[in-house]
Image (cartoon, rainbow, N blue to C red):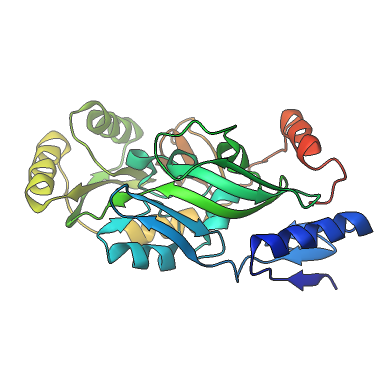
Length: 293
């Protein structure tokens, strides 16, 4: 049985990885596979929250819901909304996002800086705590989607967003592929500013508007005039489909049940996610001894 360690500080995590490297042990982060499994459960603090700058710095074991509850007290949010309630570290390592990716981008677009622990125990920091920053290499983006194979992501700084006062959704029934894509393109090419445009196929085009009550009402009316539809709340179904999807691939057409978002399709089929030769070269540079598995 592998040993499970829950470091409570970056230094403890660094010491653990240094010992594992010295002893020739394999380490996996937040998943089975190594002789030692590292959990970030105890790395769960909000370290800084600059409300005026709309930024925060957190330890990556904190859950997304816990962080957003704290930010909501100040009328702010981290605009990541993947299904379930992952930790911040999981959001980065697994490149997780949800419907709001349409407007706010993926986790790499919100990430300002990171502190990581490499396979030999080296602590490295990149980026900073402010939106305009040119300090060092952008390790944060490199670690997005790294699946824990480049290092332990211990701390992260993010750009935040004001919490909207009004949230409403237009649901447009679509049955024919050409109609679905035409209505989706009509929304995307218009001057509307939705927070999400998800096509849950077959059946529904879901368009989320957020902001002040007056602005959302105007946007909703304009969208309804453009593509029809009625108000609804489809997001539980959207999240359930995304959570149950077995893979995701580039959008190639409506050839079966899928969730289409930002030129990407979540599908109920196995999709190979190969670790590319370039990614392997990067991994070998960061972890030449192969400690992280």
